[in-house]
Amino acid sequence: MSYQHQYVDGTRIHFPVGKIVCIGRNYAEHAKELDNPVPTEPLLFIKPGSCAVPLEGGFSIPADRGAVHYEAEIAVLIGKPLSTRPSAEEVLDAISGFAPALDLTLRDKQAELKAKGLPWEVAKSFDGAAVLAPFVSNGTFADLTDIPVRLTINGEVRQDGNSSLMLNPIVPMIQYMAGCFSLQAGDVILTGTPAGVGPLNVGDELVLELPGASRFESSVR
Ligand code: ZN
Image (cartoon, rainbow, N blue to C red):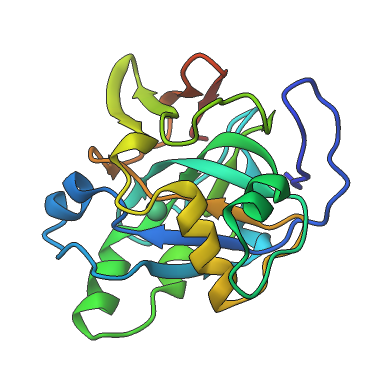
């Protein structure tokens, strides 16, 4: 299904679907569960906009490429251009909204690439690899260092995180990213996953939420 940014009330957001900038190992407990060292500087990678699919209505996963892991994350929609190390105020002014999202990963493939020291694109950038929910507007959260995110699968809470646990908090993270390359209206930031990642299976019933702000039900087709 084709994807377009929208708010929770159904309003379309008329930005192009840009790149999806991701940060790896941004929660210490998640780095540990995959036996990865905690990075000393932010570990960035980019998914193309072609990865994006809507969460609502169900989504599909690759059937024959090994384990497909979910990573529940807080997604930030960028609404204004940012470049060359913007101030915290400029970053706050450029944020259009927040949503829960799934950064899907071909975990077996990624392990193989990591072992060889190769880039992760094949494991991270397949069609459907960024599952995005509608956004709540900027201003929903008074404190960006206290945003909860939770994923429940088949009635069991699998991931229950909070931006307070991030090694790189949202605003400094976006400042860093914009210092590495320009961000544009329609780009999405995936802010890293808390502990509890695991495989998805066809037929799984999901509840993905920013508790207190937005809640969505979906399923794996
Ligand atoms: Zn991730």
